[in-house]
Image (cartoon, rainbow, N blue to C red; front, side):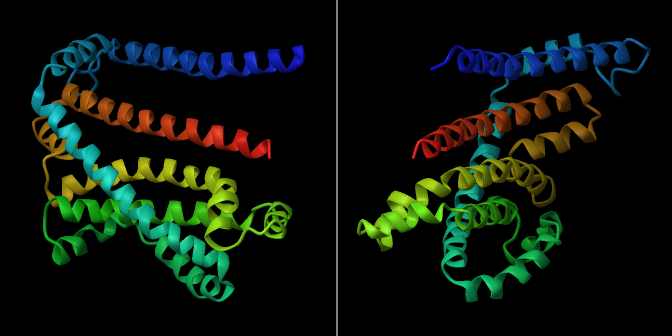
Length: 261
């Protein structure tokens, strides 16, 4: 490895760490200045009030239980969305007729906000976990389907033809050639889809009942508990960022592996 490449990787690593830290410091400073300008704490709690409330809530078992429920709903929605979207993406990749028939409808359905379907889900499924998971599934289905379809359509044809000449076909070709090559795009869809599934879980709990963080936010909103809402939203952000970063790490490694093929 050349010295220039090592320096480039070091600079990239420093930038990926330093830039978010600098932005975070800037935002916290702006938050502190705004809260210190006379804004009521019920409108915007100060950073110190937030830290105190966050430390207090760390011992709140009910809050962690609600977080676990929301995480389960989001994970189930992502799983069902992926299990539905990935086969359809493969069929669209293999069949031009199927792709031509489905794609116009996909464009139309993407124009409908999934949140707007919540009242219908309540009528069809009822209140509670099943309806929330169904809403999460709808929200993650399209990002995964679109990303997977695009990834499959842009596979390196020379690599696939070489694999076919070597005797690969059918499931063997899919598992050992097409799937690894399309994996970065599929993971990109999963990464964005899981983030949307958390949004779906929270909004679903607000509209369709439940016992997760969406319900906690509703209670805090009704009682004007702004500090509590900040803590709950922070937990949602941390949860989404953790899963996002985990999937992105796997996605990045798969891209590096594909570049070496």
